[in-house]
Image (cartoon, rainbow over all chains, first blue to last red; front, side, top):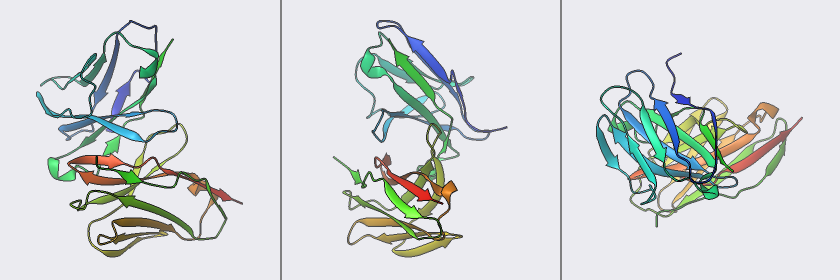
Length: 115
Length: 108
């Protein structure tokens, strides 16, 4: 299956710990997007990356959150010193090129619970 | 702030009926419009896109776009219980901006 792969699917952290979420895009896709979905809320854009570059991080909180998409390996969304408000589903999506910004293929999501 | 607005629902329709889902957007410069479907606990999946004013049909689905009114809609004909899901309207405004979604319930 060459779909978008996210792991872990479920992650439990205590307040103050770090969460690392990984995303491997669909084969042949070099553009990765991270979205956050809170209960009863819509999908909120966080960051858009290409290999080794952050293209748009306008939706990323200024503190504690960071993202990368290295030349080799998956994209990683890192949340430091998690708080209960970080509990959400984090979805990664990929597209083959910049012209396909709206035609995204989503992974199954990583559901973060902060105790 | 660029916004995409949808009625949260739920929209309840009987099996076989037409379901009409609506969406408005604030960025008048938007050129690309999308409908995603999200089943409970699952990830969104793209079902339709439309770029030009008018209607676009794909099987039981018809997307409608009116840029002057900044309005997008999705019609689902012959609704089936398996269509019960949350439908997300999305608009490219720089990046892809989603509405909160409309929950559709199709009763047998």
